[in-house]
Image (tube, rainbow, N blue to C red):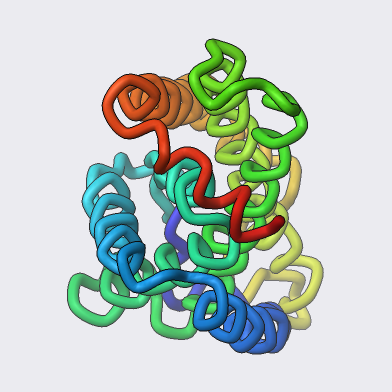
Length: 229
């Protein structure tokens, strides 16, 4: 799902940076106010977990990759704003040190995975889990569904970014200057891989970790709800 350099035009890149800059500022302020000192290591662990799981990616035709993200799990544990920071850190490190995702596309990649996926997944989880007990099986199901749905929402967002490039930037002869694939190709390719493979990986990992924490450290599953209370 990482977008490399050269696949998005300056308009899309600029818009995503413009959206993410205030999001990062707000997230930083909220995390500074709400995250307790003892939870800071969890933020680092969340970023590291996301970094590792995103490095296990598979090339997808069209120039990007498919992979799990771990964003919803981090959001469940620390809340969406802290998760936004954690996933952003992982994406920036990957882009700067490993070339996984473009420098010019950091805003776009963060929009898709640190914003869209994080918030979509977190609120889907909260909607399904409702007021159920922390140790309820409903929470495990909610985590799995949220992980699956949110990853595919992020994949759709990425596909749309790819697909609109031929409409925004093309030569006089009609050739695309950036991503050459329109929406009719980008959406089926991106969603197909994530619906069939990577969404299930995200769902299984998220659900299993939540189930494990219910037995071993149930207090961790209530942190994000306390933050937004």
